[in-house]
Length: 333
Image 1: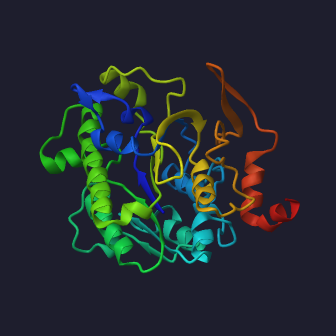
Image 2: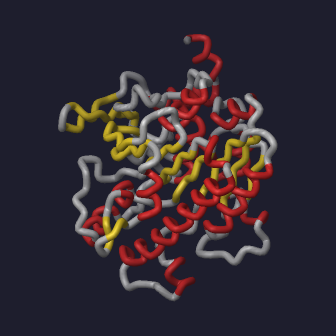
């Protein structure tokens, strides 16, 4: 099982064109082989990237204010790396920045990762922007996957495509005048790295028995102006993220039902035939269509209309209970 977490990619980028061709040609091509969700809302809050990690690792909704990763002890919190480690998987995460940032290293270990790799583990890499370039991170992760003699759960967190989006342009001599143009240059680099990683997985034989989830942590913060520059009409959701899963026992398709990143670990565990922890609030592939946002509302479509209504319970209290007293929820169910 591989999570490939992108940095700051807007959902519409998967479907938009640039100069008469797909803006993200490799990801759009790859998406045809799996389930591509076209209406995945950005559920993150103050933690942004680490909120996305909370969503995809624990299927819990972020709490307003200080991110969960820096505010709570997660050593007892049910998570997909903990579940899969108990099933005999080698679980690791890799990120091109310092492990102290957002308390990521401690949080990842608390959630059940056997190993975590950060910037100091890449002493010979030539940095781009914030840290280790995506191409080095992906090459390292592939080697780690190939060298394992047991099944792997890998969480690969990319970083190069980070605001203000000019790092790739500066490195390549293609820096542009506007943030939108720099965003496109940077995104094309990311798309090429996604394609290379996918090709390497396939040629090595690893892809055949792999669930590969490719998604972005949150939107890029320039959604409206970027869409306008590409002459793309935004959907009803506006701020959304790309979300593609390959390797499921499902027909390839574009799924327009509303989703959130908290659905990912539930979908994966269901496909593996493993019961998700009771604390997980996400939906399975058969039940997606209503998503809890960070403000405690439920988003769903009713015909052509977007409906937003309060959740029947306090989502913040539910997340805190799942972190602090998860066994209480297990006993209730």
